[in-house]
Length: 192
Ligand code: GDP
Image 1: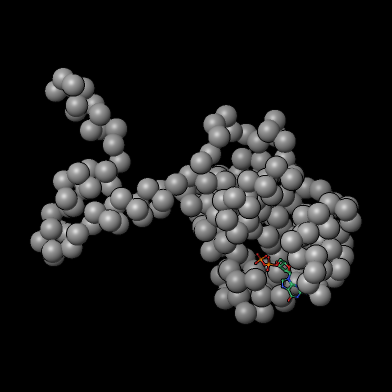
Image 2: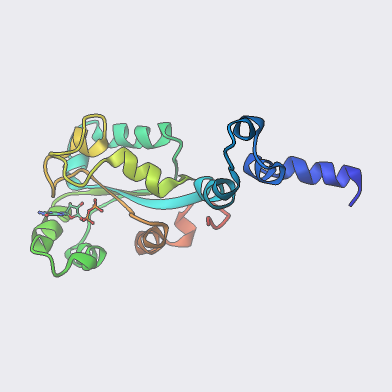
């Protein structure tokens, strides 16, 4: 490889790659800290572009101003809205979406709640979108969720908790395809 080609290749590489190749940044060398395992295992994962499914539940969509405010928070956190629609879930669609909870005592009530009014479903894309989105939502139980989180600010209890977010990239893939066809998603490139 020529010197020019090597330079061009180097410029394309992310910073974690350069740190790995050079044995770490000077600060970490001075501190005697070996960043190699972190750089190799953690940073590529940290920088992953992901997609996740968001549902604003009926308790959120019925509150004036809540839909706009929640979507604003997603965008402010760097999550791009690459698909979006407001729909009313049928009993069958809600049952299918929450089929994993079929055996739980709250399943029937949950389906009733989710079909009680419109929901706003979206696909969010960004760095670590699954984790970033769930961090914005806060814990499942709205009565325990801190103020400043979406569930803390807009939800009521463990069931009426304002919003759903996929819990892993594999789940997100399934959930996104449950609600959106490829032609409805504004993105030409398949995410990781
Ligand atoms: P999530 O991933 O944080 O949404 O939580 P889960 O997947 O465990 O639960 C799915 C949804 O079911 C929650 O978002 C709540 O709306 C509801 N839910 C969870 N646990 C309970 C419960 O113990 N009682 C009731 N009534 N609803 C629950």
